[in-house]
Image 1 (tube, one colour):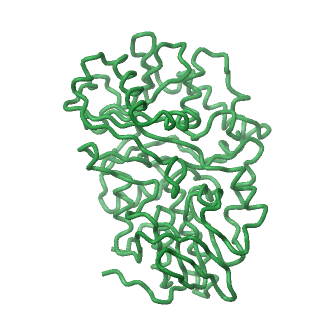
Image 2: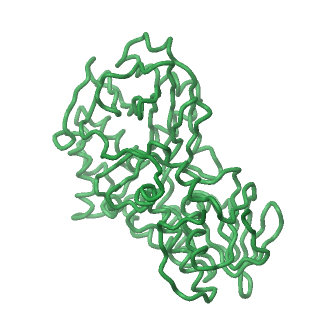
Image 3: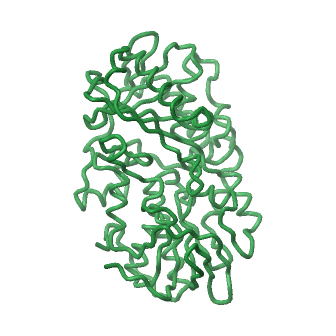
Length: 429
């Protein structure tokens, strides 16, 4: 049974990947602490679901990005958490003008355009990604769609410098047994209290006072492991108030938007392509292309990904309209007969969730340098963790995990605990 300390040295707010990383590190360092999570589950934006569709799927995190160097993939290998053994299919699959087109990623003009964004950021001014893309290209709607998916923002709202700062080995491996399920395994044995909402944090002499739905808790330090939008919108009151530089950073590097539309079938009606991913762009004059996971790991599912302003606008249309849009596009590519095989459906609601508020962080044009403020201690007692705080693995679960370890080391040092090497692969249970 997990023991909850009566007088913790550190309070961690949030049991997402960053909060779990911080808790694992503090456990190794011997620092008494507690993790407070408002939801009735752990994982944050990493959430695996086996119930709503009858098959496992991830509402949020799904791929080990930069898998060859990803610390969470190494952890998955160490504990035997099942995932794909190779990079996703290196062929681009696009349905357009009534037929499927297959092309190597390296030769695909869509991906050649997308590569311009970080390349421009590494050499030129911090301008909007839209400035370096060919907006007159007939394939621009596909380019725009992929930009929205990769960065969770429209090209007009994306900093080229921020894109260049992201460290990407271009090896992406999906997690067969669920990314959220992996994070839930990592949380076992940690002092996590679910269903406990933190409403305010006040810095007091020699510590912090944390107001929660269950009462007030005092500690020597606090780690804020919550999504950036929670802070940006002021859902968590901080006293003294957040410094202007940090307040500006939340506005300059906001959380983007991303949702999934999931459809199950009573049999694998989308099989035969030889690829697990496809973009449907038909007719080619359409403003929007839709990207689908097609029967991931052989499961009879189609999962449509949408991002940026498209995700926002579709949510306003409502869940039935989103499902019908995805299904209409699948019918274009696979025929109307698939409709009679449709089973359960689901739509994520990350944007509407007040405890999340979106997908992952992305800097606005000219604002990439503002991200560094997220790693600065707040009033000397509060340390922030989360994907938005990582200098080059932002927008990823492994970046969030590493940031939690960094924040834990900062908090432990403040509390007077000796510095020690953290083993990022060591779990509590």
